[in-house]
Length: 312
Image (cartoon, rainbow, N blue to C red; front, side, top):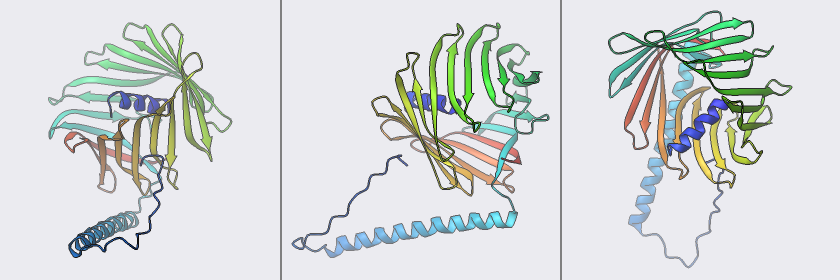
């Protein structure tokens, strides 16, 4: 969740369903008002018919998706785990990532990144140091360490502490996590390399779902907060970031079908669309195409993933 919050802050800096719905009351037409001209009435009927057809197409699409689900037998209680990922820009491949897994089938123990000439340019290697301690290293093409994390976990297998070092073994940052009785994140703190507190987050839950996160500065003063909204199936559909004066900073909306994400939208403080991502599934959901567009619809990047499916 801490990484998700960090992303929201980055999105706001880049000026990347509003969470509060405004109810508009219908006004009864005045009995003294002139009747609608025939031509204007015709335009209204045309728009109404077009809207109706659009809604019918949307319903047909959802029915088709449900039919595909029934035909393939795929249950969307599964998560996509990538085996290979091809990154494209302007239709041209710029890199290919290959994932290797060990006993942990959900988190890769090695990621190898290759350039367009199939030459290794970077690696991410995760290895166990002790029973509850892992090290995650980022290496360049010559196996030199760029940076690395030392990750400590509690008895439940959740991260309790994460330390970031640079390539010269200098401590850069520390993250600490605390959990409530249900095993959910209750507090997250981040320190610099000198172990000075930079900020901390407090998490609030309702019906088992994280509905609010309050972010405080080192002096305990609220700096910003985040509001999360969910659909009836528990999918996180709206994340909103606000400053301590209740001004909207950024918003992240997600659209789901049958438990799968199909679209993400990122908005800035002016609620204008900054960029969005679409997801396309094929080959019985073992292929995922993730395409990023600018707010005006220009394609920026494509990620083609070959995946395996595991229960969530």
